[in-house]
Length: 354
Image 1 (cartoon, rainbow, N blue to C red):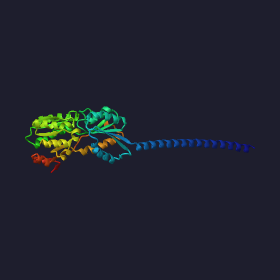
Image 2 (cartoon, helix red, strand yellow):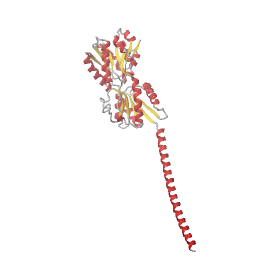
Image 3 (spheres, rainbow, N blue to C red):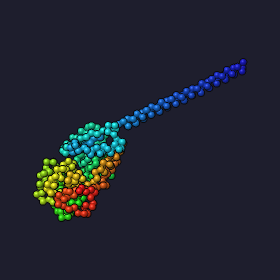
Image 4 (cartoon, rainbow, N blue to C red):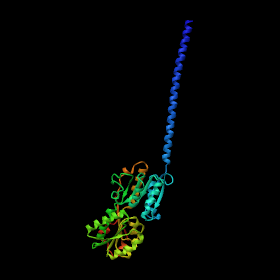
């Protein structure tokens, strides 16, 4: 009797102990299942976010001052971006707006691009960059040919731009003075030089000011050729001839770029030896050009765009400056003008058109 009762009690205790163990195992299993479910949920969210990020198409707004046909160089930018993994239509798209050489059209076009809610804005020169700056304080802006971004009020400094703007400076003010030096070396007896510039373009005005300072050091008298529209070129050249100008220096600007054939033709008609900011002028029968290597900006600006699209703020990307410069001389034009290029100048040329 007593032994059977003891066994019964023991069996009851064992049964209760086993129940407790099974209960704890059940709770542990529930916790494990809950943790696995939460982990799977978090992983799903993470993968979804990652997929959305990979699938995001960056929209780039592009503001130009030239005509719609002048977007050829944009293709070089697009090619550089493709090398960084950006494929148009897949993870990047472009919205282009061109002002057809009309400065007053820039502000409304800048506002239009901002309303499209683009992820980043790209532009070339000072007038375009100023229009974009007025249009937005938040969308990142990258320029690739601003003469003096600090002087124009676009950035606080080259090293620390601040705000939402950065890019590549063309240092055209410095180069404008250098062009006058090269003209003087090419024509040692030179004393009167006409300077073609656009008073409505801040960058052009900055270069004109720099040219005046260089002229004082070189002992040159400058004649101001102020042109704000393509229709005014012919009259400006007549005035330069009446002022007994012996040579011409063309200030870098979008208006001049868009009318290079007309400018070089008028320089030939008026028999003015001229120095230009871009090799394309020399290829259009201009005498000589001196300026930065245009391809350098095309190589150095796309990585900035890439950084910004990946989260870096423009304020943390220093404004870069050119390190490569190019002197191009057209000997055919020199011969037509009856001009002999000094050997020392010719030796320094990076390219000679014969």
